[in-house]
Length: 140
Image 1 (tube, rainbow, N blue to C red):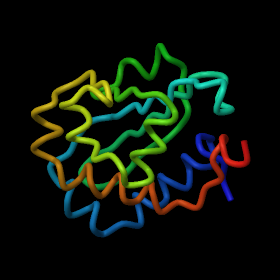
Image 2 (image 1 turned 90 degrees about the vertical axis):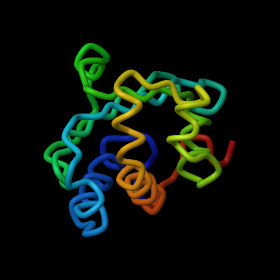
Image 3 (image 1 turned 90 degrees about the horizontal axis):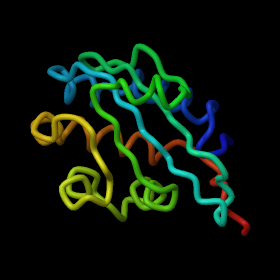
């Protein structure tokens, strides 16, 4: 089982995206890379920010990797939140598009494009939530 957030988890996520017919259909108009910044919360076991980058194009994920802040910040979309907020998203307790509008997830990029692709965003979140993971704060 992969630890969230880790490179192993990210690669499992990429595989899940690429095996998803639902995402291929929902994201036929999506073109753009996305960086998810999982901000450190040392009290929860995450001591450094983690920058996960996805190169998404028309329903597939061409690449996924952990990147430096300089590289990750160049993505078309950068979504930032503390680790515990990402846990809420993955646990289904926070809807990401609504959270971006409310500022609970901070977006750098075109919110209108995100809103136009709500189904693709929902599928991405659903796929992420289904990846078996051990979270860094479990057992604390």
